[in-house]
Length: 292
Length: 292
Image (cartoon, rainbow over all chains, first blue to last red; front, side, top):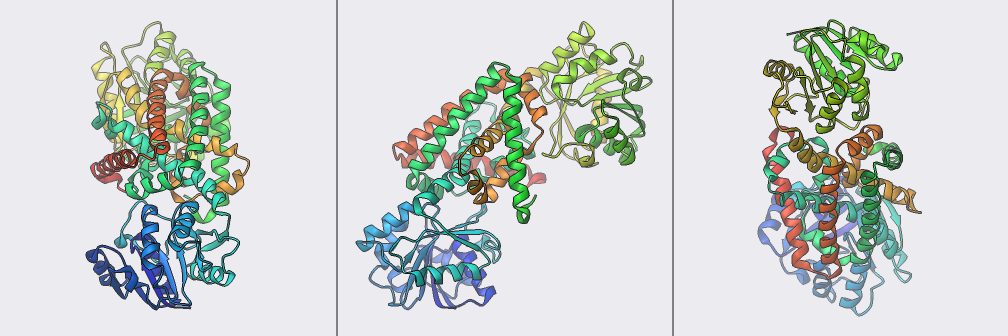
C-alpha cells in the first residue's frame, strides 16, 4: 500500500497508473506534478489525481513513492529538481522507454545512482497521449520491465514491483542495456519505420491520392506514426546506438529483399514472406490475451 | 442484375463478393471454380456458391459475368483456360492487386486484350484468407479501382461498376500504370516492410524474448505480415518495378533518418516525426468511416 504517490508528468502513462492504483485501492493520496497547471487541473477534474503542484520540489514532499513519467529528455532536469526533497522512505521509479539513459541521468543528478531508484518501463501505450486518454486497465496483463542495478535496494524493487502488480501488470527484471536492445527491436525500430514511411509518402506529389487509396492494412501499419513526436525524438536520442544497430541490420535485409524483387527470385521471396508469416502467427498465438 | 456469376478462385475476395451480391439480391446463380474440390465444397456448404466445377472451361459456360480472383501468377493460365469458352454476352473482370501485369496476361492469352475484359482491384482485405473468412460487408464503403483500356467496351465497364456498387463499394477508374504506382506506395511497400521486419527479427538469436516483449504497436504494425505469402510473392513479381522504385526511395529516407539519429539531430528528428504524425492524423480524419 502506497500512502502518498507523486506522479511527475501526468499524461497517458502516469494517469493510467494513478487510475489503476485507485481502482485497486492500492494507494492513498495521489499528487501530480508538471509544468502546465491547465493539464494538471484537468487531471484533478477527471479524478486522476487528488491535487497538484507545479513545483517538483514541493510535489515530492512526503511521498513514499515517486513515479517520473516525462519524456526521456526531461528526466535529468526532474531528478535534479527533486533530489534533495525526497522523504527518507521514498522510492523513486520511472516509466522511460529506454533505460541506460535514465540510469545515466539519475547518476548525473544525484552524483551516483541512488539505491532507492528503480528504473522501470511499462510496455503499454496507445498512440494517443495526454491524461484524457488515461485508463485504469492500460497495464492489465501487460509487461513491466524493471532494470535495477547491482546496488539497488531490493526492498525498493519489491515496492515498485508490488505497485505495478496492483495495476494488473506482469513484472520482469532485466539488465538496462539488454532492455534497450530488446526494445530497440520490438518497439523503437517499428516506430521509426512507420514514421519514416508516412513522412516519405507525405512528400510525394500525389500524396492526397495516395492516402485516399490507402486501405486497412495501411491504417494498422501506420497507427504508431500517430504517436507523440517529442517522446519519439527523445527515445531516438536516448537509445540511438541500439536503434542504429537495428536500423542498419534492417536496411541490409531490405536490400536483400529488393535484390530478390529485382532478380524475380520467386523462391527467395516466398521464403522471406513465409518465414515472416509463421513467426507473426506464432507470436499472435502465444499472446492469446491480445489476439486480434 | 447478373444472371450467372462465375467466380474463379473462391477465397476471401471472391467469396466475399459472392456473399455481398447474394445479400443485395444482385445475382442469380453463382458458380465457383478452382483446383481444390474440398475448398469448393466448403464454399457450397457455407452457402457462398451454388455449385462448383474444377474445370475452368466448364465453369464459365453460360456465365454473363466472370470474376477471376486467383494469385497474380495464375492469371495467365486461367485466361488461357477460359478464352474460347465464354458466353457471347460475358464480361470478364478480375481482382488482382497489380493491374499492368494482368492486362499483359490477358493480352498474351487472348492474342490482344479483349474489349469485354475490365481489369479491377477491390482495395479491401484482411490478413486472413480462404472462403471461411468471406463476409458480405468486406467491400462496404471500400474503394474498387477499375483500369479499363482505351478500347474496353464501356458497357462492360458499366456492368462491372454496377456489380461492385451492388456489393457496397465506391468505384473509381484509373490508368493501370498509375494504379500500380499508387498501390506500390500505399499497400505493396508497407506489406514488404512488415514482412521484412518480422523475418529480420525472427532471425535474431533471442527472438523468443523479442516477440515476448512486443506490445500492441508491434502487433498492429506487423498484422499485414500475416498475409498470404504466395499472393505477396506474386505481387512482388508482378509489380516489381513500381515496388523497387518505392523501396529505393524509402531506403534513402531511412538513411536520412539514421543519419539524424547518429548526429543527435534533435530538430530533424522532431520534424520528420511531426510531419508523419500530422499526415497520418489528417489521413485518419479524412476516413471517418474507418476511424480507429
